[in-house]
Length: 307
Image 1: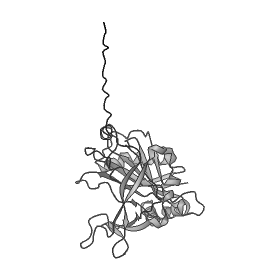
Image 2: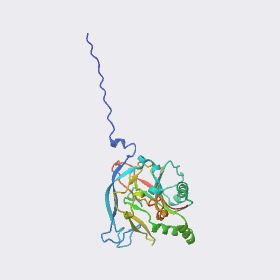
Image 3: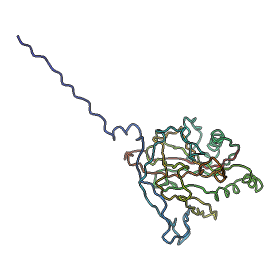
Image 4: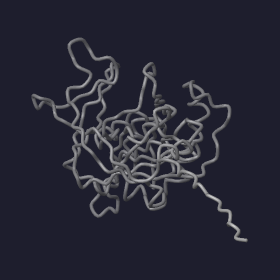
């Protein structure tokens, strides 16, 4: 008698789509996104920006944006140790200890009393040769229309050589100390940036360009005006295809980014410092899920001295 063999049909499980895979972690790897570079005032006047509400009759700023599509590489593909302050003007610190649970990141006094000492210790430990730190301010940014500060989507540098010297004179304990520090000590302005989100950050990550790829011609000084009467100086950035841009995919709360806005050694002939100024901006990653948690972050700005 002939017998018929039974057969079993196996149905393969559909592979998850790219969108479905992103629900478990933020997208990783290089991305092409729009960055907003500098476009000069129509009348070619000197550019300015008002930090506070501008005086009557004046705009918030008198220059505009020049959007460009830029490929942004993922630091995780190269490894955080591949980047240094002297070469790139940014550095990534991983596996940092958790901040004190007593810090209230909605309270300026709590941040100043409890978080500032943590940042001072971090800078003294991770900036080679540093021996003195003066923290002068911080900014909380939240992706919320009602928040006082939101992520800045414009390529910029927070300080220039002119404004760095002004900061030393403004925040040193005395005029004599300021002049001594300016004349005899290496001084830098470094921002310490971190996410306040509990989960790995997906929305509006931070992009930064290696200082070694930034030309002097790319940098445009901008008056930074406060209603108090203080006038600082920041820098807007013109697009240059030679710039190399990076971000950190899914940055977590135990990682810190050091953003070096100025380094006095960059002004010395023969210095190994390549620029000492990091252009940076928040950007909209086109891969971000519509329901991704909005970004919350803090940046603390400090003068760092030595050796």
